[in-house]
Length: 404
Image 1 (cartoon, one colour):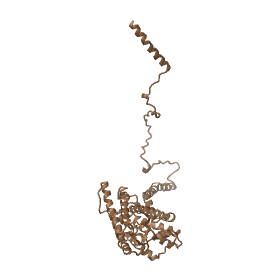
Image 2 (image 1 turned 180 degrees about the vertical axis):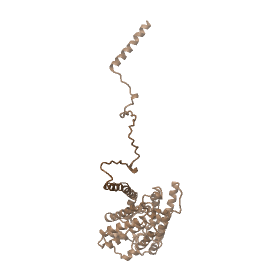
Image 3 (image 1 turned 45 degrees about the horizontal axis):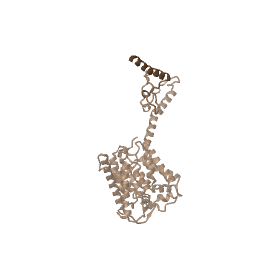
């Protein structure tokens, strides 16, 4: 069954998601000044500029009104600290569009989430700039480098098997160190509900991923708290809740069938929690998302094969079983086995006729370094050499007789 999100225009879908994500800038500006707004503007402008250059290199038409490019640029900025240098923000935007979009052939051929590629690159290459955040309440200068005190996130504290010291209300309101848009937990929850109502995201993928994360964190808490508080800390730390709402349901990457999306969400939540339990890596959601994105097409294939098997094999078995119980099929009956169209592999028809084929002469394989047959010189025998010598000795005698 096709969900409503697949029936919508991707341009309108990305435009709605862009508007919803831009709402996260309001609490970010109130908390840290206009520096988050500048970082977001740098990422969006660099994304559009990189998209224009890549379109010129590929000799395709550039669409300046494509909301997907602006959405990906804003998403990159939301996963960065407010004090990140502008050069790194621009570098992330270039990687997002050049590697995430154009290397694979454009928006309709995406394999991985472009913002996840850019953020994963910065976490690996520049961890000190991506994983250290300004202290809460400090105003960050707009253009100059931040010289204040840096702190670590809640995710880092939980990786040390320690309970976060912040209160529940501070975590909900975003008064904790973290990325620009990933710390506003209460605002993200409200936006997620609005996106579900507007069908701007996939209900099945979002709910299945949340259910997977909640079940694992409640059954196997990483810190010494109650299962409910373990679920709360897991969802409010790192990029998890932001990524589930805005990044997991990428319209160009999401599986097409509803059952495949359920599998997609469960596998994504499971992979994130395995990274947190065994990986001890901050920002692990982007790495888990890249892994699951590579398997997105396989989920559709698995579901389609199961549906095909149920329709063609299970249904025919049930029909034969009912007929046998009613006495319609006997043991002496024979039935022709027909191979389905899906598994015929262009086999020629079998008509029972004997066809004669002209046999080919076997090819003679010459060893390496040997001369071809027509180039090989015949070596005469000893008898042949003797007759040849006698022949040559008779010629002068005949010539002498003629002279006499």
